[in-house]
Length: 128
Image (cartoon, rainbow, N blue to C red; front, side, top):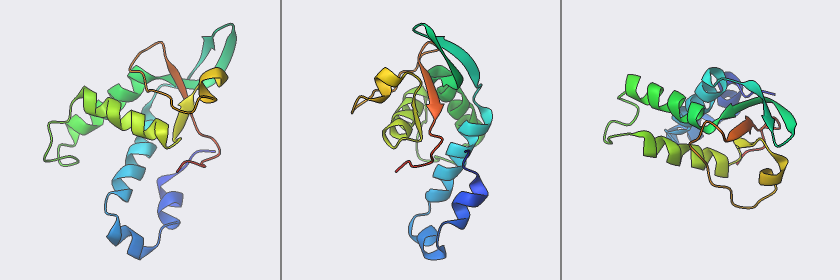
């Protein structure tokens, strides 16, 4: 099940929006990733995984968006390393998970900016 911007914003209280102004930005970035990353079937260690995307593709999508929207992070020179850190944060909060079940069971997983490392969105939407 895909989180939509509308459903996420409906779940928020108006006070919460005032107290946490970057919540909208956060939800917009998650929605952007869900809409723009290239989802494919990939073969991972003798098995296939449907609807996964590469780490490099996620970073490319975020970087392209940040460069076309410079007002998003106005006080920073937001480069590829910052996008990798943002993806690591999404991974820590379980917005997306590693595609392989072996890696998903680990407690601390490092995001890898690689076209050979695959992730899938958390379909339960139980991210933190």
